[in-house]
Length: 229
Image (cartoon, rainbow, N blue to C red):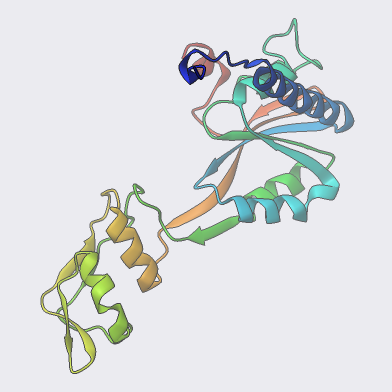
């Protein structure tokens, strides 16, 4: 009689070991970077776009190293208190690793770091769930920007359209989205077709440790606030 799969023993040791080893690699890499570079920064990001971030990272990779991932793992690498920090002061920036944040280690002057971060912004199409930044309304009449083959697809997105002598036509005014409201999957698709970009991928410096100089850049975000949260 064949053995039941339900009773078959399954070992998770390899999976656990692989996960642990991967975290150890990250921790060691962060510690090496913290030892190598004189300045350490915590940054936050909005509307991450992986390809654009890779391009940004590659543009200054000769001057530093970036790390994204588990905030807890990054905190462990730096040290979460003065008693276990890798270098004096690193536990101060470790406290700011929460939410969508990352680490940047560099030998660039502070002024140059601020400049490249402030100047970086990539506009992109908003995804489902993002809040609309403006009201978009299409008026009744022909939609010459769409070919006749698009009519069935537009109708599936909830648009009141028809073909009139081979031209896609709105039979009534149609609101694609309202300012401040989350975008539905249909709304985000229509905005993409219209070429309307409502989001931007940005990076914001949160704090830094340069030698013994610890500085917080973003107002309203203090270490005491994080410790009490």
